[in-house]
Length: 461
Ligand SMILES: NC(=O)c1ccc[n+]([C@@H]2O[C@H](COP(=O)([O-])OP(=O)(O)OC[C@H]3O[C@@H](n4cnc5c(N)ncnc54)[C@H](O)[C@@H]3O)[C@@H](O)[C@H]2O)c1
Image 1: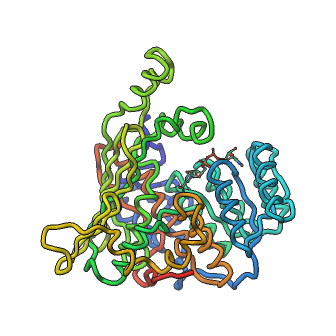
Image 2 (image 1 turned 135 degrees about the horizontal axis):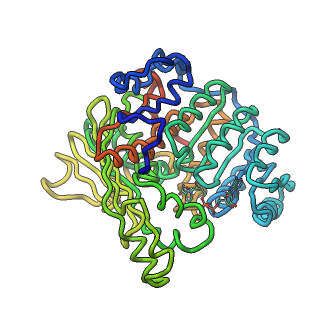
Image 3 (image 1 turned 120 degrees about the vertical axis):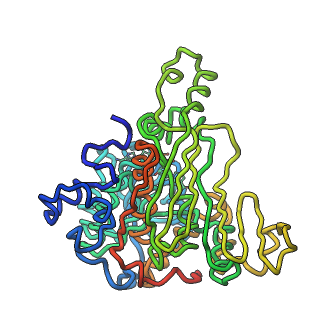
């Protein structure tokens, strides 16, 4: 069976299992209705409405955190939280006891009480959720563990935050939305790329109206991970199997998150449908053959993942996004991040901007020339505190905003609906690729609320 050919999925990309599970549609087998049903409005899905207002909770005085998964990125987040006085890590879980011990050491060395450790196997996070009094469970585990950890956290009365992507399948995306709504908890996907300097600057230009009406964007995750996939530790352990089994955009949110915010997706607009195609797969075989020899199993392995996956997404209001995934070829890093409006366009790679009436006709300006006047207020306020933290500072800023929103009882910058609609692109792209690029409708996780929820404003520290 080809990747994406899930027996529960029909050819229109509808997850029939989740519809039938609700009971409302039981007996309605006609696949002709699928395209409409996939819009997942409240009545058709039997899920009830999403909240009328953006979700928020009463302010907290401090945020007690349980960390689940303290490998590379999880440990980096431990350091971020150590820089925020109201954040207190009181429990740590990892399947590898030595990683729990290392995180505990980091925390006590910073002058805090030792957090309780959990490392009795891959579901010990359930015990953490049961036994600990926490406000937030934060997971930086491999992709397939994000949803089980977040769901367990919310069911036990904690908010949840997860590394990217929040979920691997559309079903899982709905699980996050349903659990967050049922238990009245936040579920935040930590998309750090929404907090990098240029992404924030471009969002600021958009909010100031300088690019006009936004009509198109190009973004992606183009990162030579061949070494990472074969280095036998950390990400290699869990990332390589996805390249073996799946073909589509496996890591959509770094590119998609920032441009979705510029386009007010879920807050004024909505992803409507996508089409996706993948190139042939060559990069991993060539790389393994060069490194380990042509007969090595890593060189003869069949990798399902096409080297370059291109997905085109159209929103309900007619904006388009080209989203690329390319992690198996020799190439310099880029997320592109080009946002184009009726008055001009700006992009991060290369670093340039053109605004009609301001730039010389047909000539790019350097985006750095815009720092002084147009840096986003959040970046201005936090850049010094963020200096030296992961990924150029953006990781600290995202952790800061997560804690800030909890302390101030504010809606999250990125909520569970963003987590779901940005992450579901993975499985939908796989389904489209497996069906010669057929269009796949994107579920409306907001069930129509996107028409009224307010756009993300100019946030600050
Ligand atoms: N936002 C970013 O820029 C960024 C960068 C790197 C990684 N990530 C994301 O962070 C996550 C982790 O990536 P990483 O590079 O840190 O990988 P990693 O392999 O270094 O860390 C994962 C950790 O999770 C632990 N783990 C695995 N299963 C577990 C379970 N069931 N319960 C508890 N612990 C478990 C592992 O032992 C390991 O310590 C991934 O989702 C990845 O996509 C995001």
